[in-house]
Structure formats: structure tokens, C-alpha cells
Length: 381
Ligand SMILES: Nc1ncnc2c1ncn2[C@@H]1O[C@H](COP(=O)(O)OP(=O)(O)O)[C@@H](O)[C@H]1O
Ligand SMILES: [Mg+2]
Image (cartoon, rainbow, N blue to C red; front, top):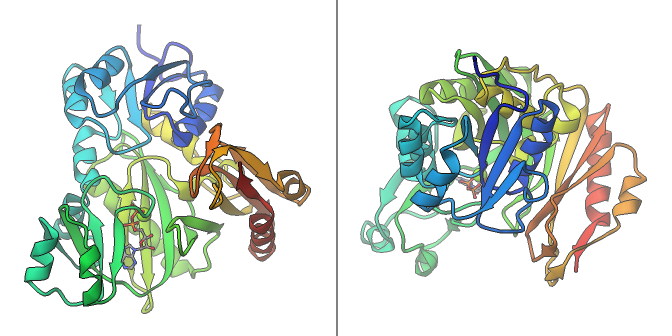
């Protein structure tokens, strides 16, 4: 009998059991698709809502291979997985989206940047170095941004080197060194592509970063940009996903430079922090779109039905232990406030514990509510 890509006979493996996997499962339940999750943390956010939950390393060949063997489709919520196991499973007929080949390009920021260069995708100029001494030897002109080629996330593994006295803090490991872009805005476009080659992208969002944590603090949609830039951002995102020949969901982080150029900063082949508002604000959420894309189903409509802002709920500094959300009910009294808690029992400084989406008809009003909500809720222990 032909495999149906919805309903309880479809076994999907989610590699990674964090909040992205959890929100993916919330969507999959509506399609009655069974999602099985794998994560090294026995208390990961997916553990209580996955159809089955396996505790194990994502980087261990045998663990990932054993997890994947009986699944129809495997997908990820994190790039850092054992690609060799994925390649073996793919050979044996397991459908894996994003494809292992794409994960190889993306998870190493050096290979990722070379991919942009080869495909004429605009990006900040860069050089690759094997170690910090290489940077010192060529007396690289400051300022520049140094990024670890692998293993960095959420701003960890990225640093600004302003002056030569900062050379002492250079990362030792292989890195990409980029020209510092004095951008006017950071934007993100999430695009999906299925096996038929159909693509659909979500309206661009504007990201405002927390200066210290280097995490997105506020995200607004619609972005405050003109139509030409909006169109160009969508075209660029589509160009990237088509050049990758990727199936699945791709978040494309962009810089809008002072002179109106768009540069690709980095990409993530999975649901992304900058798409959480789509749960409330768009006809189809990024999580449902991811599911549709990897299952070979028709992609959903991406239009916004209302304006939105998103705030990450990060563990406050100075608190570590069982989590307590101060001010949550007060925030929920405000119009259009939707909390999402990730089911993490313990907080620590800057840990992503949840997010809040604020919706409304006017983006200005939504922004003002978002700033108030952000000052009211404190994640303590
Ligand atoms: N070339 C650059 N010029 C200016 N700022 C940059 C540059 N590269 C990164 N940044 C800043 O650092 C943040 C984190 O870098 P990014 O490459 O996106 O790594 P991460 O994997 O941590 O998200 C970016 O969102 C941006 O604010
Ligand atoms: Mg980033």
C-alpha cells in the first residue's frame, strides 16, 4: 500500500528534542503524524509530548543510526548531528530532510561562506584561518568579526575584534573572519521548499538583538522596510534554497546595509527563533510548513493575518535553579499576549526558557506592548 504522508502510519524522527522539536510536534499532532524524538537530555522539552522519546547522543553514529532505521522520514532541529549516520540511513532508503549533503554545507560556517561565493550569493567578505596565529601572522586589519567554523550557536562562537589589543581573545580553533558590516537592520526570511521544487517564503521579520547576550531580544513583523527590499529579500532567500537544492525549511538571516544592499549572514535548515510569531500571526506556522515540506505535502499559505512581535524569555542573570516566571499573569492581561513555555524545569542566565508573541492590528502598538511585556516578565528561580 502506498505510504500516506499524514496520519498515524507516518513515522517521523525528530533529531534533537528541544523547543523547536516541541513546537514541531504540536503542529504534527494536527496531522496525526507520529513524531519520535532523540535528545541527549532525558528531560528535553520533547520528552512528554513525543510519540516516543529516546535519550541518546546526536553525534554518535550507532545511536543515530539505530534511531533512524525504522523511520519513514528524519528531520532535525539542530545542525550538529552525526552526518555519517544520516548518509548511511539515506542509502538504505530513509528520507532525510534537510538532506545530509545540505547539513555538511551549513554546519561549517567556512563551507557555508564558500558556498555563497561560488553561487554568487551576496555575503560579507571573509577569509578562513586554521588558528589564531594565522590571523596574527597576516596582521589582519581591525575591526573584524571572528566566527568559529563549527559548534557555535546563539552568539556563542562569534566575536567582534575591535582593535589589535583584542587579539589575545581570538578563538584558537578554525574560524571564519568576516568584514564588520555596519548594517542598518538585521532581517530574516524563512523559506520552504518541497520535493516538487515548490517554494514559499514568510514575510520578512526585523530582529533587534540583546546587546549583551547576543540573542534576539525583539522580533517584529512586518519589518520596517520598503516593498522593493521585501521583494529582494524573498528572492534572495529563494535563490539560496534553490542553489542548495534543499527540501525543508530554511531560515535566511540577512543584513540590510546602510546603502540598501542585502547580504546573507547565515542560514539554518530548520525552524528558527525568528519564525515563532508565525504560530499566531500567519495562515501557516513555520512548524506546520516544515512538516509539510519534509513530508512532501503541498506547502501552506504564508501570509500574515496580523502584526506581531516576539520576545525570548531568557533566564535572568543571577538566578539558577527551578524556574519561576514573575509577572506572567500581569503580561497576559494585556491584549494579544500569547506565552509559550518550553517545559524546561531549570533556569540559568540567558537560557531560552520560552517566548511570548504579541499580536495586534498595528505594528506600532504591538511594539509598544512588546517593550512593556519584556520589562514585566522576569525569569527567576
Ligand atoms: N560580519 C558581521 N558584521 C556585523 N555584525 C555581525 C557580523 N556577523 C555577525 N554579526 C552579528 O553577530 C550576530 C551573531 O552572528 P551569527 O553569524 O548570526 O551567529 P549565531 O550562530 O550566533 O547566530 C549576528 O546576528 C549579528 O548581530
Ligand atoms: Mg545568527
